Image (cartoon, rainbow, N blue to C red):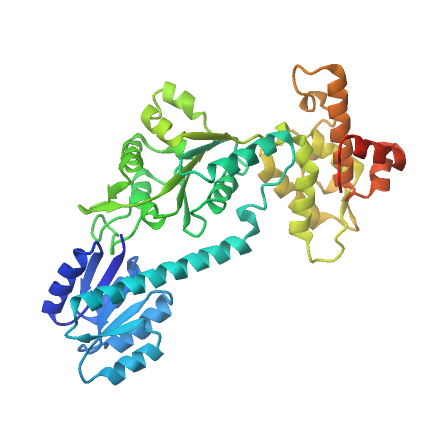
Length: 454
């Protein structure tokens, strides 16, 4: 529901405009003078301002200039009486969206407002698209070519084409929000908002207000109307991170929104209707929480229409070289020599460590190593203490799938070792062969055997 602020010192105009525009489905806030209006612009989530030109005290022109300083993208329509058209033209030069002459025709006013709101939506969509294209971590940080990650990519591609709710589970640090963004930015809603909220980081009262918004005066400190995350995500995607930590009382309200796509703001009576795709995530075993009575079963099935389980880093060690190279480029790119390598002892430590913090922990470890290293090599001593203290033995169980014939297991390990060596050595075959203790011709033979292309 779009919110319009009407500003006029003539009460009759406020009453008429409020009734006219509410009948069109807009939410209307009124102000009898420009100073009160400016306070509302600062504090409330508005989509449009319609203001009279001439008012006692602060004029409509001054209000326009103040609005553009506070919120440059907020459209402002000026209302002007006959004889002040010159002032209206001046207002257009100061970036008013349009002007309407009093007394106005209802249909013309409604059409002007509709166009102004459509233009605002286009501006927001363009900004979101620009941010999506420039922010490489929308999708770029989902790195890996291991079988578990390929399965995740396949699910992302399929679910992004649907409107179904998605539940993403997996340990902390595995990139659940990145997967949610990938689903959004590959789908039909990619030009619309992606809004996220951590359900475990707020108190029950604050979480309710953040999700559903609140009306002015709903509680102490609610000095203006505020739209919640559901409303901000209208036509787009809402990502509910750590949804398993949501209090039971809010689970009931969330269920209703998912069923009806409608809710009331805290302290309000007006029903707000939205069109939102919900993607949620949790590092908890929500199914077990359902059995234990900690999470509503009906809500669980509403959220879990499609389930994506993200593998931990220790379940996909083949991706460590790709991730390491990506993080080195991220933290060292453009700062001199681009060919930072890891010593054999450093690689051995990375593979031996169990990575309880998953990809996020690996990223932090590489950032530290890039800062501390000297020369063109990251050594064992550049790694965090917990990695240097880990047992550096080869855990063969992490590489061999269960119930696999011997020859198949040997080939699988060989392929992984060849791929890993090539990645670690930037696909320089001679260096990769040397690290494996074989000849260049032999590694070329293995590459052909396993269809490994550079």
